[in-house]
Image 1 (cartoon, rainbow, N blue to C red):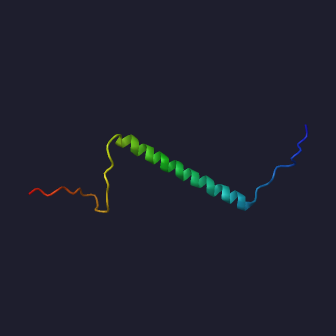
Image 2 (cartoon, helix red, strand yellow):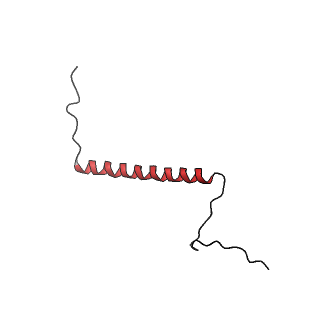
Length: 64
């Protein structure tokens, strides 16, 4: 059987760069998903503690 489509197309540098950028974005998305999954596994059903820029100290209510 002969190849009717002809020789395979050689990608350009721009096409390769675009594909590389797309793959890097996908890899970053996978890393983010793994980090999120690990955080969910660590925390289980516990709600996350929010740090609203107050540093590492925990603020407790003042007792009267």
